[in-house]
Length: 440
Ligand SMILES: Nc1ncnc2c1ncn2[C@@H]1O[C@H](COP(=O)(O)OP(=O)(O)OP(=O)(O)O)[C@@H](O)[C@H]1O
Image (cartoon, rainbow, N blue to C red; front, side, top):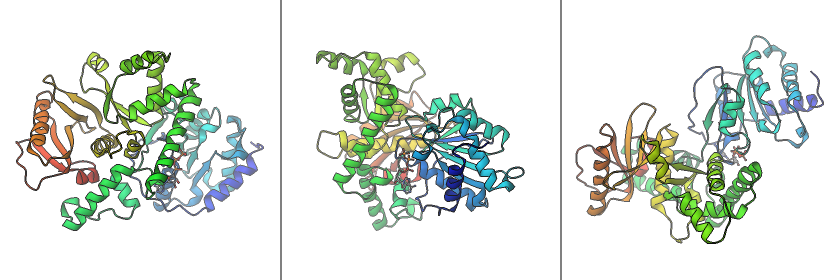
């Protein structure tokens, strides 16, 4: 079917297929392997979704699919403004006009970026899967291509892969310093470089564009990312009218990264200052911030829904680099940054994560239920140098283990003393190794 966009789409196809493959840092994103489904690549703005689509395309090419069988199209193009769902068929027509040999017998792959700019694109995407034998990867701005909406609108025909800022290993790879051997085999000099790199990663975070920037430029960049989320992904998208309340909320949440947050307390505080806002609005704002991937909240690990509801959630930013933006102490908050990095490592491995508060009042940072069925109790600690700290952390793990006797107990510490006596069943891991490996 001809459309006013056919010629333009044809030109975009020719240009995209002639473009050299970008030299990107390889991402270790987990992909669900379910044939016949579209894969929606989601994540916070600037986390690297488009780049990851290109990685997937390059992988297909390396595995033998010629470039003609791989089509990347970005709909974020002012010349396509006004395109409607009915015009999307023109894309398939333009593609087959250029590559008639792929129409019948071959299995081509489309990478549709910023697809959400075409209203009503979902039936088109479903049809590509069902009738055209086209494998489909989708990505879009987190403001519009929200995970649960993709799931609903694609009627179960799409699965998701989440792209986060670089992990520690990916950040090292980006800098050309990924160790080529297991961390346990590093020389003293290599280990000391790795520890130094970890310190930098915890401060600077993993956004690709923030790597290697000086402090002031990095703050400006990360602030612009956060502003983009607040303005476009939350305020504009959800038609909210209290920008200042949203800013206070974010300051409160991220100024206390890895801390417990109570909407009730925050609401009471605003009321006492004469700010009229409904508690429900605050709950919604928090949910929108999570949907936009700016932060992740962790509930108490328990089977009791009631206990989960009455206990506050702990809130973690998507990236350690954001901590310094909101911290008012003026000192680098490395302890919290390490907790954030450990949490994201657990989440990347597909774990369900909660925090632990034992009946005796001991706290353990994370209980992680892994897809394999394994359970871990993870205590994160900066420095285990003094024996009182060590004893306290070990005691908390032992106490928590009474609730989860099957769980492995891990102490993950940035500074590990050369010799340390631990009771049976408690494993000690150097943070730089644990984050590098992604699992013990
Ligand atoms: N794997 C990577 N290697 C090198 N640079 C990267 C990588 N991933 C992202 N970047 C850089 O980070 C920036 C943002 O990446 P990208 O456009 O892929 O993110 P996005 O999530 O699609 O952004 P948006 O939310 O704006 O659509 C770009 O400048 C890109 O070059």
